[in-house]
Amino acid sequence: MRILLVKTSSLGDVIHTLPAITDAARAIPAIRFDWMVEEAFAEIPVWHPAVERAIPVALRRWRKKPFSAATRAEWKTFCATLEAAHYDFVLDAQGLLKSAWLATKAHAPIHGFDFSSAREPLASLAYNHRHAVPRERHAVRRLRELFAATFGYLLPEIATREDDGANSADATAYGLDRARILAGAGEAPCLSETQSNKRRLVFFHGTSWPTKHWPEHAWRELARLASSADWHVLLPWNDKDEHERAQRIAANLPGVQVLPKLPLAGLAAEIASATACVAVDTGLGHLAAALDVPTLSLFGPTNPGFTGAWGRRQLRFATDFPCAPCLRKTCPLRSASAAASASASVDSPCFARLSPTRVWEILNSMAY
Image (cartoon, rainbow, N blue to C red):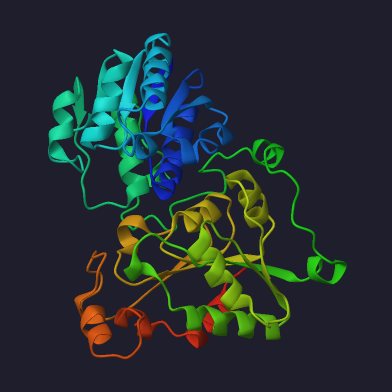
């Protein structure tokens, strides 16, 4: 059975899909997936043995120059690849209008969420087969239920527990093949012998929403506490702003290292060798969970019950601020504070409840 899976983005959403693929492969050993995914995340699908190939799509890039000759040529090649593949059917696991539209390009029957389950209900009109999945579930469980309904098998008992999914996992749930990851990792950053013998702590300080950022001064204080306790702190980054933030966090702190820019496979290899991670609500925190690395995730405006890191040894520290989780990308309280302040940057007030001292205490209570 050959299936086209559509789950294009974001990083966390892509990783949330892996346990469902593991379930399907265990229930139907002959099943094989091709996975349509945004080009930035195309390394990930083939880390799972049940995925034969990733089919990159570049909607984010194509939208910038939709009528250019290069975009038209890439789109033509993309459509030809799908038409030549001959899938048994397509599974749109995203439930958006854009993903439903992309799914139609394979010219095969389409499965997906029903009208009441899809993130964008009108997307369900493009599907030949629609499946009801309760919305008030963690994202991982929703996807596992969608796959089970699509392929007609019963979910593993551990996946049906009535909780937020944090403990409903085993070490193999994500199904990642570490050998495949390491094969694409490239050369690891050079560590001194002293550094390599220390416990390694990775900080995922970058995230997409302004309101999801833990304050920079809090990261720096946590780095100081970890360094003083003889941990080696590693700071990855993705863009210019994250690189500059990482440099400010690490400045003049012994044992705190800004990593070079790494591909996803290289970063995954660094995470896999870490003792623990600390993350805001970001895709790299989900990657750490998929690699079974103990991780403490910090939540302000978002809901860990729906999108928190899922897996063994995952702890979520969520603010108890009265209006959280608000699920807002801008904070009215922060804007009002900024207007009344001489400072150009005022931290989201909900994160004031998550002090670096308390984060350090919780981190030290985790089992590694």
